[in-house]
Length: 327
Image 1: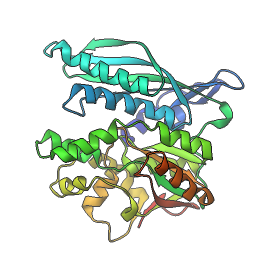
Image 2: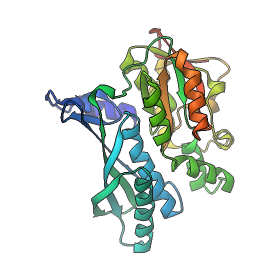
Image 3: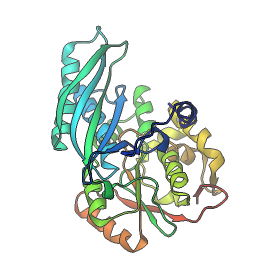
Image 4: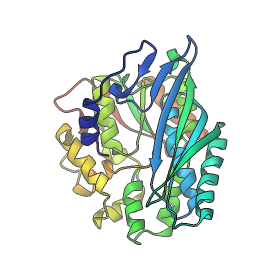
């Protein structure tokens, strides 16, 4: 569902009022948070995907990594998960088994456990998880805390949506497919642990609304504007090639139409790059807003711990006429 449709639906849902509800439907945060005690808050999220990879085991890994990301982005530790499965009768059960195995291995890697789940008959296979994590109520990281002067760090390349669309059209190279699969199934746990350790002001992850869509949410939630240096944004090189061939997901096009009124683009940013910046991602990286004085240390720690693609892509500034500036 695109941002515009989601916002319209959420406006019609009544709010819940509970002093322990720290983040709910009305916050447009990455996950919901409910405080249990002075030291423990539950972080809950759910995410379901249609197949994003031909290999069912890899699809399961990606779906699990994607669901876990919304817990990591809040600075929380995942503890349990429930499988959510839609499965057509026409497919072999071995296909389903491989999906669940892939998801289970990724949950195990995260140090969490799967408690069970639910299956339904569906025309197309779908797989996802409802994930629960825990976090200290005073150590929650949200998309609300970005401050003018902060530096923006992105931890994974973008372009997975465009390459996935090329895959469906039998136009993606094996190298491109391997690159995005490796990225999408990589947990954001190291990046999350590192930002919590150092202390950052805000964070969101880059998923279905694309870099521009999630950056816009962060800017609006924090009451600031963001300047994104487009040449510094890490991308999968093949995504630009396929964008030039108009191999674009419908979600990417909708993302761009939604954010365009809130973005000031430099004249050098061509249409293909605009699509990449708005590209709908699956299991993307973290977009972190951190004090400038800490930014180089954070980059160094991330790279030393294996997050080699982490890069500074922009800055936070006081509110401008438009929430985002791409220069």
